[in-house]
Length: 454
Image 1 (cartoon, helix red, strand yellow):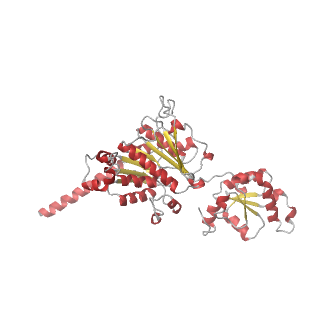
Image 2: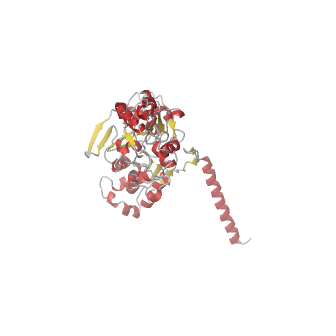
Image 3: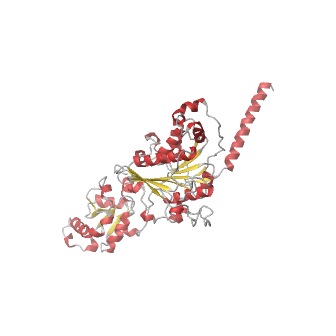
């Protein structure tokens, strides 16, 4: 065998050896089960190598910050040597990851298990129309990579939960809570306390936003302020309540600012303080929070929580902004969309009662439906009965139809509120009331693909 051939064989064996080592490392890394049952490897996060000086490209790139005496060379080096985990690549996380990458944070982790949807683009500016259907974490990573070659970005396409949270959080210096549900807020808080990480928390709904920093500089954790979760039925998310896109944009930028301040040692953070933003008036207000609670279940003197718990059970709600389908009625008090479509096609006399809020009804509605918001239904039962009698009167002999025989179909956005409405109607004698299972969203998917969804 010639020398050249021998060298080539040695190189091939080296590459094969490296591939086997990489495969072995992947087998050792934690696995995670996605919400749809797919098993993912958690991405490998190797130790972040700190630099002691900036190179010429970094000096040129970050010159406007280097000129600030508050940042300077040492502050910029601190940013470069800091690793930040952003949980949620939505309305809050989108501006946060972009500004953190642009500012020179050395390594960014992005956690999100959802794909990009068209309805996200009104506020989630890290994505665009070409990314619809792409995993949000990957989309955000792609944007970061295009924005800055100085930032090492790692995407976690997974739901963060009790089984994987510590493995995900442990390698990072600072954690950003850019999520939108209570269960994940408690999970991130507890994991950050156990791992000793500061947690920069933000939230936004409609025209309001909030910002604070937990578990930092001797300040309280989330549980110190909110020992128990709110009742699930009192929690509104932006999927149901709506949000003006710029509001989470502002809060997400402020979260990035807090991270930069903590990482560089600039100024004071919002530890033991909460920033409240009212977009309607444009007013910012800061309130003082009580300090660390000695009786806190996770960070108090005698903690009762020493490991991550079942947060879905604790909060009574899933870690998602999607409204889960409920089953409150027996099958004989429900109608499928196809069954109701047959009623409409057969022109059978009935009342279609839409119990969504008027602002939603004005977006779209089925023809000849009566809008009575669920919150007003009990007060307007007389209106419902009158409308049902008028609908039934299309049959010549139906004017004297009994109340308990009036045909009423109830619809809402997703088929949850309509069930509550049917329960109320039946309690008041409307015994033929039925809800349309799945609501208008299912109507659009099963019956009329041209019907708007929102």
